Figure 1 (tube, rainbow, N blue to C red):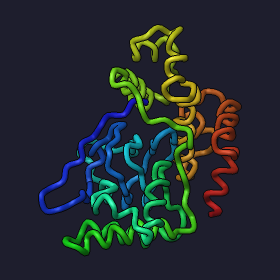
Figure 2: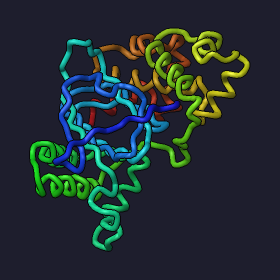
Figure 3: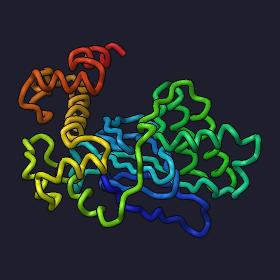
Figure 4: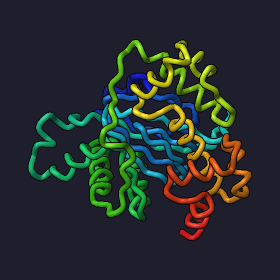
Length: 286
């Protein structure tokens, strides 16, 4: 999908950006920026898109996204007047501390982490609680201590024993500028309507190309079929419902846009490696 370039604003007294968001629609679109992004979801959940990865995100998650990696977080059940989110986010250029800083031998661990961030790094172990506190300190402090807290946050991620890499190694980020509106339209329409039947003619009309050309076009740009893309979104939504544990597996199937239970079971297992019931039980057990 073609992301939009986002300009991250800073002020004259800070060398990088840090803030707390309480409104879910802040930058709520598929976008990218040259700054590295470190984000902590103190409150909020929904669907997460980073590179070619589609998963759920939940309260407590900590994620590091590398420079120019496209991403998007879509919050669950948020209205325009709903401020029931709390997101702590930091943006910084890799060389804001000087062009030679990362080349120092003492900073190899930090340099390696920023390279790994191109794959999207999620902290999944107990270390994320301490890292979340450090991220909050970055936002709350000023002066030299602000930079020190950022470095401590990053070094804590680098030292964490449980990390999850989200993006496929071969995923490409670069698209022609002329494709921006078309891919953005496909992306947004699918996210808004994945619970409905979306036939080839409909999505081709959204893309303003012929049905015969659509499948080849989409796969050449996204490196996956449109069927795979929409089913990943549906399975991600199903994972969220299964984790909530408020609906039966069959109810989750139909609420996620699947109209055949056997197909739901097949796609879910192919994407997650587990059956829906196994996934739900393993989550509750953990």
